[in-house]
Length: 219
Image (cartoon, rainbow, N blue to C red; front, top):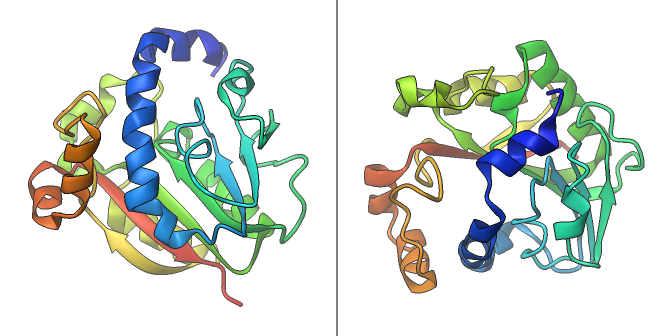
């Protein structure tokens, strides 16, 4: 994308960021932290404004993104790398215990591009390391999926499981409906309501439009 910073400024208003951060504090504490050892090294791929990496507990934190505005929103403990996800400069082979990405793969231009990203994530993960992927599920969104100018690659929970598998991962959890499509949609915004939502998987079946996959690099 030629002018990523301008697109992000248009789509994600800075005034909305504190509310998103409060939601992500709960998402990390009440759900994602179960996959992350606090003594581990974590990488946030296409980290956006740091909603995940700022709120997860880990010994070492790395974040990559092409948006030059990103670094100013990250905590001081986060090492930021302005680099492509299919060529992660500054991230050593087998140095990461857990990689995470949210609402990123659909922005890639092709399955080949997606394969390149998955191959690069596999490179930086330690054997036994995990890759958590969250994103909009084309199966449950239809036309809404294309309301964003930079959405290119339609993925479902099943097609992504195949993609991960053929690129060397072992999928250990596949949730077809997890969160609503966006934080502006049906997901409750108050921290107590977000926490309650996470503890009530039946609500995921009703409101969820995003998949969540947990994959593992074979030891």
